[in-house]
Amino acid sequence: KTTFIGMRAFASCKALTAIKLSDKLEIIDDNAFEECESLTSLTLPNSITFIGCNAFKGCKSLKEIVFEGCVDEICQDAFIGCTGLKDIYAYSDTPPAADEYTFEESNYDATLHVAATALEVYQSTAPWCYFKHIVTHEEAAYGGIVLQYVYNHDDLTATLVKVTIEKNTHETN
Image 1 (cartoon, rainbow, N blue to C red):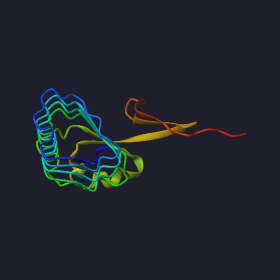
Image 2 (tube, rainbow, N blue to C red):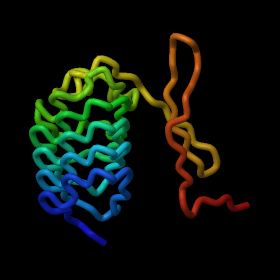
Image 3 (cartoon, rainbow, N blue to C red):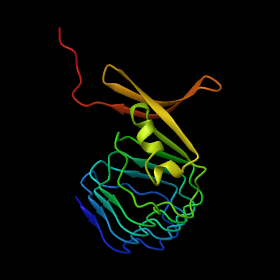
C-alpha cells in the first residue's frame, strides 16, 4: 500500500470528487491535491504524519474533513481557499500540529467537531481556535458498535456523525 503521495500528484484533477486514502499513508506532499475543485470530502487516516504546503489549496467544493488521528505536521496553507468547508471532525484529544495559516482564506464559519475532553485545548490552539463554531461530539458503544454523535444543546437533538463496528468483538458465556 502507498505510504507517500508526491508533490502535485493529483493537482488540477478537476473531475476528482472522492478519494480513499490508504490506512498506511503517512505523507501527503506539497500541492498534492491542489485545485481539485470537485473534491467534496476527505478522511485522513490515523497513519498520516505530514501534510505539505498547499496540499489541498483551492479545493473549493471540499465540505468535510475528518482527522482520524493527530497529524504531526500540517504545513502553511495546506487547506488555503477551501471556501466550501462546512465541517471538520477531529478525533484526537491532541490537536494536529498545524501552522496558523493552514486554513487561510477558507471558511472559518465551518463547524469544528472535537471530543468533549479536548474542547478547551482546541479552543486555545491556533489555527483550530479561529473556527467560530467549535462543538463536542460524543461517543457511545453498544456491543462492538461505536456511535459518534454531535449533541445540540439548543434544540436538544443529536446528529449521528460516525458508526464504527469493532472487529473481533464477541461475548463469551
